Length: 386
Image 1 (tube, rainbow, N blue to C red):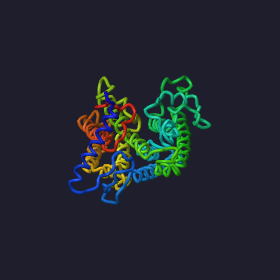
Image 2: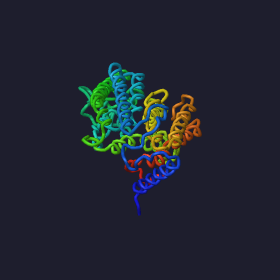
Image 3: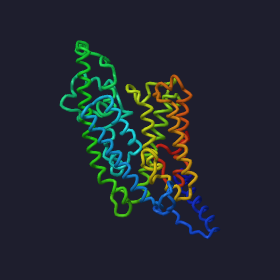
Image 4: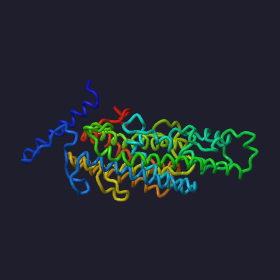
């Protein structure tokens, strides 16, 4: 039996050959088949023609800009760790979540430096482990040596937004502390966490300052990305964050569509203390759209995956991506500023509409998108039909 990857390669070859046959009737030249950097065409935004290398340059620069923006917000958070500066830093980081390639990615991937989990370890989190550090006071002197689920932006959320008196398994020593002392400890721990996040943000920004060029020059002679297609696959893998983490974990699980016995499962939500779930989703979608459509954070103008689809003659698919992504944003806007935690209880149909709208994007990712661009699905998604 043929694997899904081989079937997909056969499908894309047949699709290209069919397009070529049609173009011959109009006396147009056919693009070469199975050439990694072939297939140029009009920009989806009406600009110049783009190639896969053009896209990689744009994607690398987009990620670098977002990393620099996060560094700015992380340093502001360290300068004054408040709920508001946390929100700004978290919003900037959430845009980067679908851009986990290059230095932002795990070290098992090309150029990866394992920095993401040091900044934001979700879903590997534990408030009780954070409380253990809080009660012991072991945050003093810095938190860089602590396990990742005891620091980072999720730990900061708990420390800044939870009730000062709230703690797992309180000890006699903890009970003897005043509310003011407990609050002071949480603030001191939050400061140590914020300082560590700022250090990691600077490290990530420094790494990206040169790595964008590495991505842009993928191909023969590039030790990190020996082929353009291989680099394109790494960026594509990152965008699938909206399939795995967003659709399946952040939405399907709390809704009760998977791994939830009695919906809504509010304890499965990403943001447990700051009611930031809708903002997480909006920023995740924005980051994905910057790669899919273009890096402008308001209009999504610029070079994106949609331009590569147009270059392959799949302009209708490119339009579907833009339409469905806009619909996903509209579904979040329809919550009227309510957090997903509130919508799940008060307006479950509106919360389900968010899931359905995101699925409209991810269904395209798992089907025509990988077929037309001859990409491989990320590991673990082969055969995933939901």
